[in-house]
Length: 237
Image (cartoon, rainbow, N blue to C red):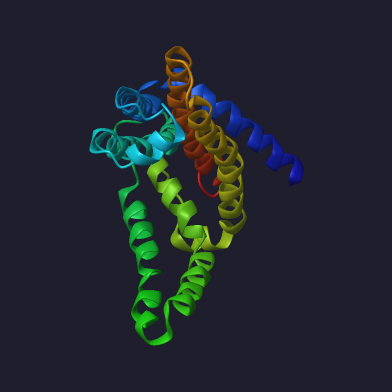
């Protein structure tokens, strides 16, 4: 199992990059607004110094692009999951008719329901104890994440019971793969901004172009990690 897990993680790293030429529109969903935000940041002088960065961090001229970037990041992440599921089934990734909507909506509804008990009892037991309930329920329903990812990719073969019987290790593997790909890229994303502070304009532009690509890779790697890590073959094909 360990050898298979490492092999699958290697495929995740490969495919998180390969999707860039197989479906370039997917990383573009976040790369473009990320770069436009950097253009705004450079124009308002955000990288002149760390003090300028702190002062201008909430400037509306950059925040409007920030909201679009977050939307693009979520869309690119979900599209990456959808792409690999559609790829396996010979579907077009942008054709949402291929999504297993029943399973997708059931998973969404059940995941949303797990937040209700903690919310309901919080006034009587306090936020800290309610938080423990939320954590316990999240752990107890991890296979629902596998179901959500599989349904987004178009899987219709497995039942809710199948996911709770076979989805525990795939759910853990999914989170491990996502963390292992996200953490170093997120570190690089933060460092790019630190390295740009006070630098010559040419250096700042180069770093911000590179950073836009890093954020795109964050989305495609995370989406690929969720899809590949969450596979429960042969139950879900």
